[in-house]
Length: 337
Image (cartoon, rainbow, N blue to C red; front, side, top):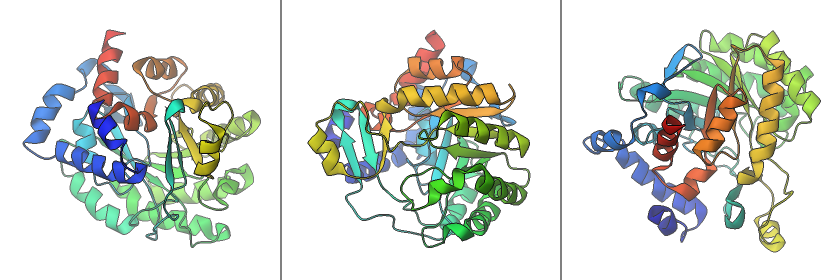
């Protein structure tokens, strides 16, 4: 908590970069050996999904480690997997700063980062080195559309990233649900999504492929995408991304308005994320992998998602509030359940 309190004095994006330095240090020998003794998940938490053994069902959602620079540190801190990205085929700076805002009374964050990342090629070099490490966590790679590419040409852009990154990924996730890239969410329409996913699946080859959806879809749309993913032979679905809704926030309206546009994540997303999980699980076979993310703060939240049919669970925003031992706390409490 002291770590988080210190970082809270900084601009949120600056705080994130400072925190990442600490996380990266946690993955460097000999520090990593010491950290792992404290944080290593119990063997009973091992989870089989996507043909892979995950040390814990709890991992880090995409957006936290956009460029795959903190993977070893996050693994050392006890996360069972790290979904890096969102990565784009073409490097991009993202939206102008400030673009990340804390809503402390809601334990939430608004972001309009805009897929800021160094591009697929630069990340591929790092991930290739990581794959040779026996001490690495499971690595998922989340890919999105390059901002300079027109939505009409999105499929070729996704295929370019998939071709480059799928051979390096334990699983590949197609992000068509961020609210911060103009036009991206239009790709969630089934008639548009189907040919895109077919093309990416062909490019991904044997690498497990998942699609990540928004919480702002209506229930029928969620069910339709889930059924499409099964029909196309995808391996899983990630539910959910951030929301455009501002309903039910307790943060002062002036603060929320000042933050402006962007996706909301954190505790306020919990109820809708759980609803979407249940809709997806009802629409897909038992063996289909469903990763639940959104509003996860505690081991009780993780257990609730697993009981509702999630195969794996991810978190992000609460890490900013709970600090570096968050995964350890969740893993230990899960063992006590």
